[in-house]
Length: 198
Image (cartoon, one colour):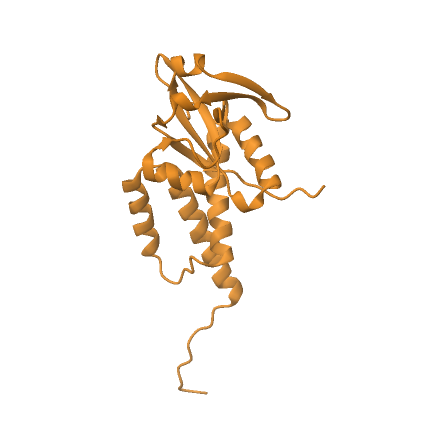
């Protein structure tokens, strides 16, 4: 073989590492971009500049979940995420992919999809919303992954809402259908999940 050129080989493990890393970076960028379409376009444009990445691989998808989960975890434990202005309070809601797609299209929580007849469930902390998302994923994994979202809500909406205690998740605020849609939704991040076998 002397004098002949042979292409360098990259092991399958090398490709998996590249895809996992690229997915994690994209997950972090997407989570930080929130629901801003222009920011998402920039994150996607930047990711398409990286060569050799298979965005359809399971390693890339796992990396994406890890990256967005890191941002979600940090956001849930660091103060200041989604803080509301005067006369308003922040409510948090875990949404499945279908509802997230609707929010990305409209910028608001609306009736339909994962609504109950009375309205929509929200929580007063991101941690409670994440706990609810994990339970929902275990009940219906086909709806996942779940993303924690938030919105600043006028206190008049809270006063018109009822409260329901959900075992294990805390107290949910049921915003009535008459007060929807609620706009100004922000995505905090994807909730890391795993199926719990019982």
